Amino acid sequence: MRRRRLGRSSLEVPVVVFGAWAAGGWAWGGVDEDEVVRAMQASIDAGADAIDTAPVYGFGLSERLVGRAIRGRRDQVVVMTKLGLRWDDEHGALWFETTDQDGVARAVRRDARPESALHEVRRSLARLGVERIDLLQVHWPDAATPIEDTIGALLELRRSGEVREIGLSNHGPDLMRRAQATLGDAPLASNQPKYSLLAREIEAELLPWCRDEDVGVLAYSPLEQGLLSGCAPASRKFDKSDGRHRRPTFEDANRAKVNSVVESTLRPIAEARGATCAQVALAWVVAQPGVTAAIAGARSVAQARENAQAGDLELTPTESARLRAAFGALELGAAARGGWWSRLRRWLRSV
Ligand SMILES: NC(=O)c1ccc[n+]([C@@H]2O[C@H](COP(=O)([O-])OP(=O)(O)OC[C@H]3O[C@@H](n4cnc5c(N)ncnc54)[C@H](OP(=O)(O)O)[C@@H]3O)[C@@H](O)[C@H]2O)c1
Image (tube, rainbow, N blue to C red; front, side):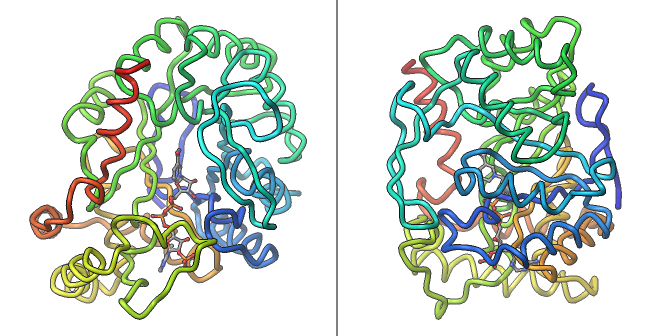
C-alpha cells in the first residue's frame, strides 16, 4: 500500500481510505453490522488502515461500528471523523429531512457553532471508543457560524489532545484560506471533495489550489457510489431506502451510457492489468496530481480487500489518459456531472 503525507499535517495515510458512510446503513438501504465490521478489519489488515466516518452516518451507528472494528488495534488505524451536521438538537438551519436506517424520521441541521463542535467531539470520542481523533473535519459549511469561530474551537481541542489534525470537507478556497489564517502555525490538513472519473469539477480550481497550498485532498465517492465498479447493470434496482434510486447518474439513461464506457474502456484496461473495474477507477483518482487518497466505501470483506489492493495499482499515463477521454466525452447532463461543486459554489456565494 502506497502512503502519502496528508498536506503539511503529521498524518501519513494510505492512498485508499475506508469510507464508512454506507456502514451506517442510512441512505444505503441498511447494513449487515457484523459484516461491515469485518470489512473494516479486512481493510486495516490489507494496509488501507485509515477510516473516514461522520456522526451523521447512520446517526451514530457508523462511528459505533468503527469503534467495534478498531477495538484492541486503535494504534494501527488513522481515525477520521467530522462535525457540523446535527439531528439531535434544534439549533442551526434545517438542511434536509430524511428517514434513518430504522425508519425513524430525522431532521438534519447545519451547526458548526463552537459549543456544538465541542459537544459533538465528546460524543464522537465516546462512540469511537478512542481518546483522540486523528483527523477532525468540518463536514459542510454552516452559513450561520463564521468559520473562524469553528476553527477556534477545534484549535482548543487540538491543544487539549482530543484532536490531532484539523481538516474541512465540502469547502471552497475562500473558506479554506480563512480557516488556514485562523489556524496560524497549525496546518490545515485537508479538504474532502467529491471526485471521480465522472465528477471532475474540482480540477478547475479547488484541486490546483490545494496542490499549491499543500493541503491534502481526500476524494469522496471515487466509485460514483459503485457505478464505476460495474456493479450497477440496468437490471439492478435500488429501492427508496437507498439514495441511489434518485441520483442523476443512476437514472436508466445515464446508467446505460456510463456502463457502456465501463465495458468499452474501463474493463479492458482492468483485464489487461489483472485488476477489477473498481480498482482501476480508484487507481485513476489516486494518480491525479493533488489527490492524496481516495475514500472508498465498502460494506463487505471482499469489496474492502479489493479496494485496498487498488493502493498498489499504478496506471500508465496512456491508461489514465484513455480513461479521462472516454468518461469525459460522456454526455450526462449537468446534474449528473458532479454538479456538486457548482451547487456548492452557488450556495457559498449566497451566504
Ligand atoms: N464529506 C462528504 O460530504 C462525503 C460525501 C460522500 C461520501 N463521503 C465519504 O466518502 C466515502 C466513499 O463515498 P461513497 O460511499 O459515497 O461512494 P463510493 O466509495 O464511490 O461507492 C461505495 C459503494 O460502491 C460499491 N463498491 C465499493 N467497492 C466495490 C467493489 N470493490 N466492487 C463493487 N462495488 C463496490 C458499494 O456499493 P454496494 O454497497 O451497493 O455494493 C459501496 O457501498 C464515504 O463512505 C464517506 O466516508 C463523504
